[in-house]
Amino acid sequence: MNKYIRLTMSDREEISRGLAAQWTLSHIAHNINRPVSTVSREVKANCKSKRCYRAARADQKALNIRHRQKQLKKIDRNNLLKDYVLEKLRLKWSPEEIAKRLKTDYATDMIMRASYETIYTYLYCLPRGSLKKELLKCLRQERKYRHNRKAVHAKRSTITDFLSISERPEEVQDRIIPGHWEGDLIMGSKRSNTAMGTLVERTTRYLLLVPLTGHDALTVRTEFAKAIKKIPKHLKKTLTYDRGAEMAQHKLFTQNTKVRVYFADPRSPWQRGTNENTNGLIRQYFPKGIDFRTVSREEIKRVQDQMNDRPRKALQYLKPDEAFSQLLINPNLR
Image (cartoon, rainbow, N blue to C red; front, side, top):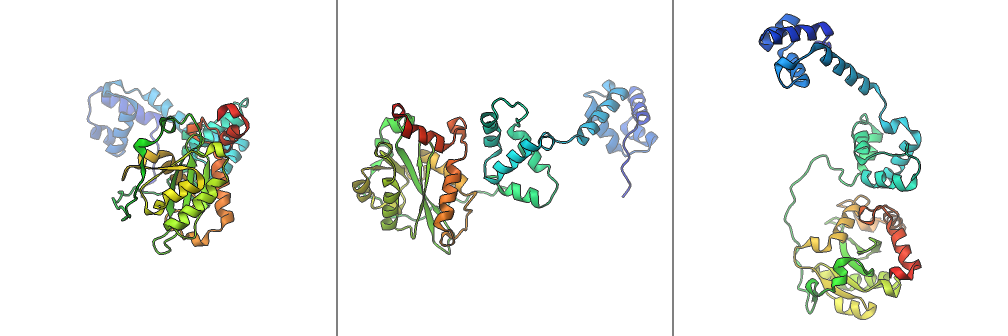
């Protein structure tokens, strides 16, 4: 392979003269002993019309590009900023969450600023190696390629005598009054047939992860009830769920917890958007195919704490822990 040699100022002057004389690009390339593709790229990069090409301007532009390439990226130039970004990435924070939270944690320090685009660029421009591999795995979408979704819906038994989401109080939709929850299961591998429960408060995005020994109706009702009973009375009003068979004992659940259960329409995940979005974040910790029998309760509690300590865009980058604590401390917010 021939070694690439950059265009010189004299090459660019020859290109400029050739264009002014209305020579073809092939003729110009032959004169300066370069491939036609090199001349074509040079002209396209520096002018919209061949008559507008100027050798001095094109040469200066090339110098500026080479100078920028040699400069350290913004995150590399600030060790404190770099340490902060890497630390939060390892905690599974998204680049956007990190960028917004910087403005809160370093409100008066304008040096500690980086847009989420800057963080993404930094990640994907890292040289191949263990660090890049580690950090890219921390992103919510770590797949290299997109795959078509498969429209596969599990067979579910009929839920009887239920309250439809259309009967849910208007205050739930507005998210003004706290205490309304959304619930779901995160399934493990098909071979293990295991699952973990998730409960999310709609106003604060506060998360409860519920370890399960099975995902039958009795187990789900019992474990969900235990988790809900730990919440203060004024912060548990309703639960919105899909029509999964695991919530078949919803009437007993309501009797035990005083929390009314409303069921979303079939195949309408957007009606429980808070829970669906949160489940996507949880998958960063517990990917598809996991066997939940191998996950300890301590690990589940650690992930729950990390999720509740993670700034959320919907909360103006407050953390769920902070938003939930405000409801406990300030009675006017209840």
